[in-house]
Length: 257
Image 1: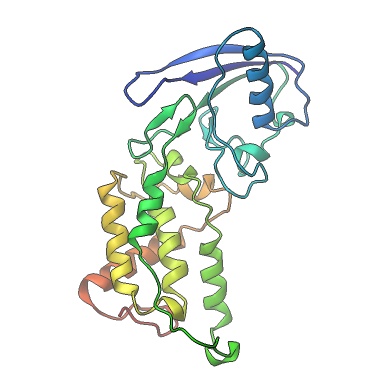
Image 2: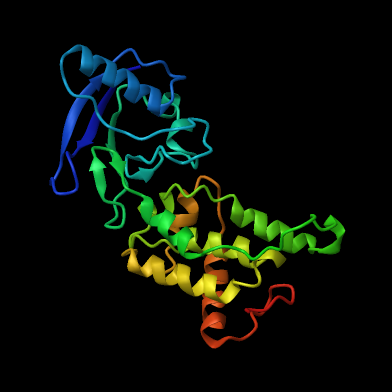
């Protein structure tokens, strides 16, 4: 297969950046999008040109490091990570535009690599969960309703890739923050710091410069894990309850502490 790539090139956060057209020929249809970029870089290096910087790690759709906007869609045309997007998903001869995440909270380090440490700081702001030392409790001593456990795990599968931010016209991080707050606040272990955790994570999210949620819903559609918009509703309820110090309705009797 043959493709015409419009690759975003940027030397750093202060560089205005530009698109560079690169021709890619002889591409295996079963190659992933990252393998396409590797092949492009091999040709560039052999020709004495600089390689295009992009991020990756597991290449198995687990870590979310491969943060590329492909033809205007975070990660590409399917609801998977970029490393699980294959060239058979495109037409032979197609022109493909490749960009980094677009958000002030994710400054470009170089080319297609962005600094997503804002997510790390939101998680850090959540702090820890209180536990006691000593022998592990009997698993049956802390019963959790199946529906609560399922809701917590559905939120916990967030990989923190940032596709939700890249897809949102406001660059909001509510889906990510909502997922982290939801999976911790639903479980019994998360109750002692529940109110403090919610307030601190929302405050840090705002401090990082993410936009506000206006219910476009693009974040959930772009999420490779399919995180539901329900976590945003949960975050809003938790935040209001934490401000008032009142119980949160609809969470299996658990209350903000």
